Every structure is written in structure tokens, then in C-alpha cells.
Image (cartoon, rainbow, N blue to C red; front, side, top):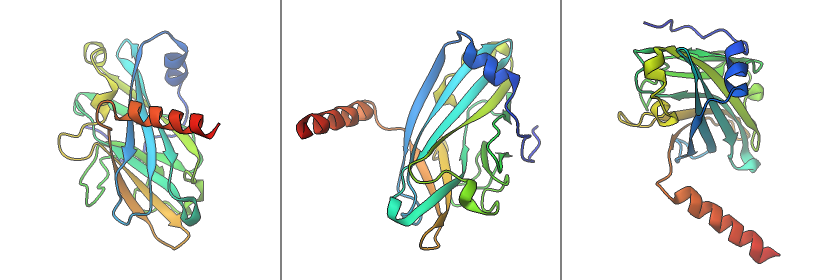
Length: 208
């Protein structure tokens, strides 16, 4: 149903309109699990906003939390979603070197539905320096089109489908030791993020 080539780069009018409007958004947060090589780590979120009239915006925000001593760049990511045969997803950001990807094979985690990567290539894409460096954060927008009735029922969790395994995976390259990594992510159990936040707050108070 969909073109498997990298989607065209360029911030769309839709993206600006959706976030400028008053549409209600939903959001999910996720954190990385141990990767295949134990090198890369990240945290992120997905925010879905239904813009009405059969269009909406998905914003993926990622922070590279890998150990700083070994560096490394997050150079690609992919996600699985529900209703993939009933909607059209188009990459809409303009980060230099990045392109959208559709149905990437993220072996050994299987095939995913959509994402973005340097050069539109999950495994390669040239120099990793245009990726997300350790400690840096980038957001990526995807335009979503489908029936207004369906889009009005979607929530952010629908773009993080874990029914067939991991709902999200990231690619890392350019580590100081020459390594690379593929790192899946999961949503924390209910209450886990609140517990982490309280723990961090308590730690700051004790240091005062």
C-alpha cells in the first residue's frame, strides 16, 4: 500500500498547524532496554495530535543517554503501529541527512513499520556525525493521514505497538571503540516514571 522508499524531507504546513491549534494530544514515554552490544542507550516519547479532517501529527522525541566516555550517535529509529494498513504516514522533519524509512528490517528484532535514519538507511547512511550525540535531543515529525473517524480515536500508544515484540528500536553507530548497536525500548510499568521522578527529587533535596 505504501512506497517503501524514504519519504520526502521538509517540515509541512500540517505540522505547524496541528501544534499551533488547540487539539488535545496524548503522549507515551519509553526507555531503552539493553542493546545487542550493551553500548547504546536512549529515552524518548511519542506525542500524537489529531488535527481533524483526516490528518494528524506524530512527534517522536529522542535523547541519547549512552555513556559519554564511549560516545556514539543515534542514527536511526523505527516503530510499529496499529492500523498501519488504514493510515498513511509521511516523514515531515528537516534534520540534515535524515530521511524517512518504511518497513525497515531491524534484524534481529524483525520488521517495523516506519521511522527515520541517516541517509534513509537503517544500517548505514554515511557518517554518523549528523546523528544524535550523547546528551543531545532531537524531535522528528510524521504527518498521519486517514479517515477522520479513525484518527479521532487514536492515542500515542497506538504508534508503539508491542503485540509482536518491541514497539520501538534505535540504531547506534560511531562509538569510540568502533562499535555499533541496535537497542529496543519499552514503556515503563505504570508508576515507574513517577517513582523515578520522586527518587530524583529526593536526591536533589538531600544534596542541598
